[in-house]
Image 1 (cartoon, rainbow, N blue to C red):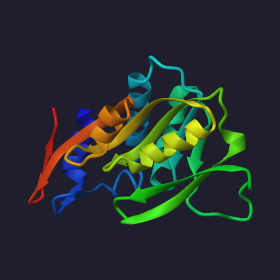
Image 2 (cartoon, rainbow, N blue to C red):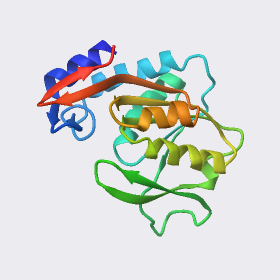
Image 3 (cartoon, helix red, strand yellow):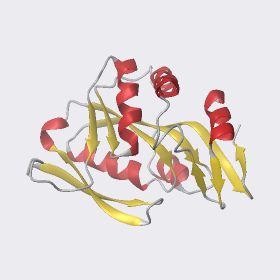
Length: 192
């Protein structure tokens, strides 16, 4: 998505060789008009499959998934919670995910009443680095017997192992709107 690449170049910031900061429009402050374009693009890319629910993980994926939902006929958005609370159903699917950004393992959970074996799931997230979040979400969906139709990623770090882990080792359809091949001394190089 050329508009996304341009936005990353003008508003993003590379840190070191593995961090891209896009909090001015994607995962802290949200450019809603631009997020609508991202949602439209996901709907175009995944127009060949049935989607009954969009699944993501808190927190950064929620806004992307919610805005994208309107382009999938307002299918429900279900997000995996990272923290236990008293109002969370005790009957839930469990998993764990390692966060590259936070360098920590989180428990994740989704109430069993929100995903079923009839569901056709599209997983959406902001970043793909090591692929652990997408795999953990896929696992929660499979615990319910749901079918994962694909994974939509806004920005993939192509120089990390996540893309290979999902596509080659786990045979998952992954569609990334922008793939960064490298970050070197503040310079971002995109895959064509």
